[in-house]
Length: 140
Image (cartoon, rainbow, N blue to C red):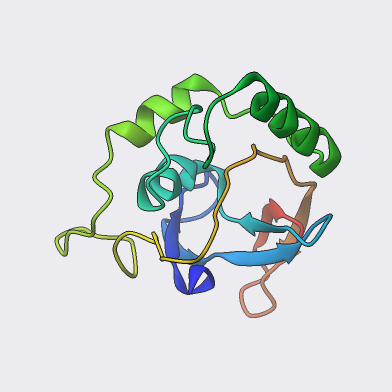
């Protein structure tokens, strides 16, 4: 279901187009959700995680250390406070007018989603075979 979500890809070298999320296997049976970096606040709002304190378990020193260790093993860094603030200002449910999302909140009973951090992907060039236009994008 997560992969069915669409986001606007706001880049300098492209018009606003809709792109689909992707799941990528990571370490220890975890998955990375690949989205345009500009859409991170929207995604956080959709899954109902709008604070660095929303770690999915009690915020104890032990759990903070476990999260830091998981971040290190997965190769991700903490999400900046600026992004958390933006996420709190975005409504989690879908509005039909000017919507870029395929559905509303992604909170699903029985499914565990933990926001560990962000990882910067390597950038590469993609050439559109039809138009010959070269785009810079994250390489999956």
